[in-house]
Amino acid sequence: MNNIIYRNLSRFLLLFILQIYIFNNIELLGYLNPYVYILFILLLPLETPQTLLLALAFFMGFSIDYFSNTIGINMAACVLVAYLRPGLIRVLSQKSELDPGMKIGIRDFGFRWFFIYTSVLVIIHHLVLFYLEVFRFNEFFDTLKRSLFSALFTIILIIISQYLFFKPKKQKRGLL
Amino acid sequence: MRYLIAFLWKHSFFFLFVFLECVAFMLMINSQNYQGTVIINSTNQITGSINNISSNIVDYFMLRKSNDKLLEENTFLLNSQKTSFSVSDTGFQYRDSIYRFIGAKVISNSTHKRNNYIMLNRGRKHGIELDMGVISDKGLVGTVIQVSENFCSVMSALHKDSKISARIKKNNQLASVIWNEIDYQHGILKDIPTHLQLFPNDTIISSGNSLIFPEGILIGTVTEYHAEEGKSLNSASIRFASDFNALYYVYIIKNLKRKELLDLKKEVGDE
Image (cartoon, rainbow over all chains, first blue to last red; front, side, top):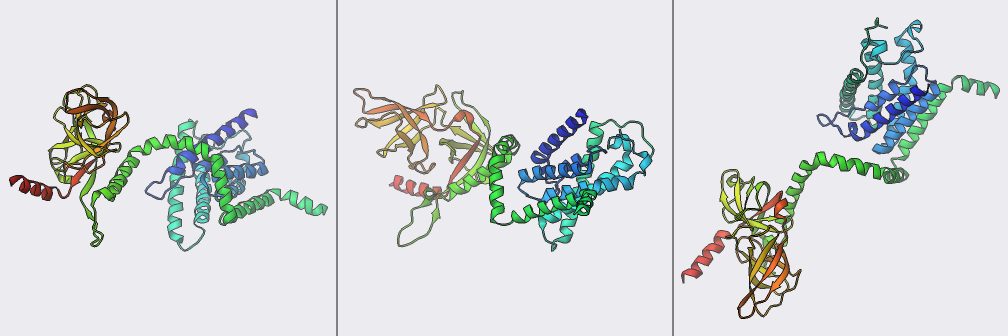
C-alpha cells in the first residue's frame, strides 16, 4: 500500500517538474504544447476511490496552474478527466477482466486498450484546456487544430514513456 | 433532510466533480479581474525563487540566442547615441550620423603574443573596411587592418605598432596609449605634458582625433604615474578597460565621414 502511495507521489512530482520546466517551454512548430502531466491522472491505480481521484486531479491542476499563471484552467480540465476516467474504464473493459492487481498501462492492458484510453482522455483534456485558455469561439478552428495536434503530441509522448519505463510483458488478449 | 444527505452521498462523485469545476471556474473568472492579478502576482513571489533556479539553468540553453539579440540591440543603441551624430546647429536641425556600429563576434584571439590579432566574423560583405575601430562593451579594443570577404583581422591594442590617440578625461589633455608588451591587462600612456599630475584611477578615453574612434570611448584607468626629472613628457601605466582575454562580442565602428575628413586633411596638408 505504501509502495503505491510512494510510486504515485513520485510520479506526481516528476511529471509536475517535467511539465513546468520542460513541456511548458516546448512549442513545437510554434503552437504545439504537450501537457504530459495528465499521465499522472491516467495512471492512478484502478482501485483509487473516486473522490480521491477528483481531489488528486484538482490538486495536480492547481499545482500546474499555480506555476504557469493560468489559474483555474488546468484545474477544470483535470477534474473533468478524473470524472470521466472511471466511466471510460468501465466502457472499455468488461467487469470480469479487471483484476484488482492490474496496473493501468500497456503492460497489463495491452497497447490497443491503453491507446484508446489515453487518446480519449487526452483529447478531451486538451480540448477543454485550449478552449478555456482562449475563452472565446471566434478562433474556433484554429484552436481546434492547436488542441488536436497538441493532443497527438502528448499521446505520442505518453506512449513513448510507457515503453521507456515499463517493459511490455507478454501481450494480453485485446480487452476491447 | 436525511434523504437529501443520502442523495448527495450517493452521488458524491458527481457533486464533488461539479463543486470542483465550479471552484476552478470561479478562480478562472476571478483571475481575469484585478483581484485575480493580485493572486497571480503573489504566487509569483512564492514560486519566484524556484523559477529563478530553473531559469538559471534554462538560460544556458538560451545563451546564444539572447547574446545575439543583445548584440543587435546594443548595436542599435550605439547607433542612436548622441556621439554617433554630428552636433546639429540650433538653427538648422538635422541629425546626421557619423559613426555606425556593426556588431561582430570574435572567432580567434590572442593575448600572449608580441603582436596580437583578433579575427572577427564580419568582412567586406558587411561593409567592413580598413582602419575601422573595434570596441567591446567595456572599452576600446583595436583597429581593423585586414579585410576579406567574410572576415576581418583586427590589430588589438596589444600590438607593438598600436598607438592610440587618447585623452585624459579630467582635463582633456591629449596623450597616446601603447602596450607595455608584457601582459594583456596593462598599457602605457605616454606623451603626457609634465605640468600634469595624474592619479590612480584617472580615466583615459579616446580623443576622437584619429577618425577611427569616436570621442569618449573608454580605454583604461591610470594605475601608476611615472614622473621623471629632466624629461619633457611623462608616462603612466594604465589598466585597459577591455578584458582582452575574454572578448566575445565586439562592435566595429564605421566612420561614415572618413573620406571627407581625410580629403580635408590632405588638402590642409598639401598647403
